[in-house]
Length: 370
Image (tube, rainbow, N blue to C red):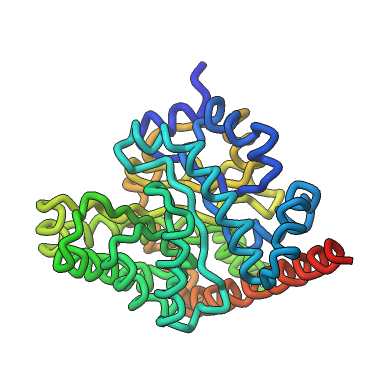
């Protein structure tokens, strides 16, 4: 019997791994997941690198010592370690990139999260990361904050492929797509081949249930109980509805006619945190052709072992998703309020992870010089 990962891939859902470490690369684990688990891309974030370097310090020891002896500061050292890992992952996924004509085989690396509200700083570092990784299958992650939106346009306009991250609301998603289209126009004006540019829009999923479910538990009503676990999937399905509408804009169609690719929605934060829920729900319930789903390894393995793929679970449920949020709003749970709070929390959490990473690297460099 065909496993769910193979069925999803055949149905046009791209499965990416939401993790990267030197240990995965050195051990052959990532190569194995690519060959046996249909992994077609990799995403990283500050939390992932903080864990990779703090938990797997031995894998980075030689490079940390070299950076310390060379006089690099903490931030320059982090950039060297992380871009080296991303470059190696890009090389590993290059055959997927070639076979998919550039659609998959992508590896993401994020700008310093402390730049989330700094447009010019984000633009400069995004271009720097693109040059440092120096691989056509890289994606530079830029957060979808108010300051990030104009940065997206400028970076796309320079021919850099972008993963827009920390998207929660449909409204913000629409702004991201418009920023992408503006970037494509700028790229065309700059004489850049639009076919060389790719982008995904990372919509965070499970964090919405993580915030909404406790609010429903506090209400304790029968309706609140019925709505438990429905908010995140409904929100993502509304984003997909917006995606379909936005891809039919005259501007989007005109750009596509001259070689531009659509910006694919990517479902992020798909690990199930509430053990009462099926551990494959944020994969199986968001299966639709043309989407990307980036998963932690535990979710990847769960989907392989017992996921049940039943076809497109998004398109037939777009209208009912609106009803879910109408009921939530009637209970006093505002969608925009939830999404805005989660965006702010997401930026803060990534900054905190980055600072922990800086502390870890600083200590390791000091020890190397002792």
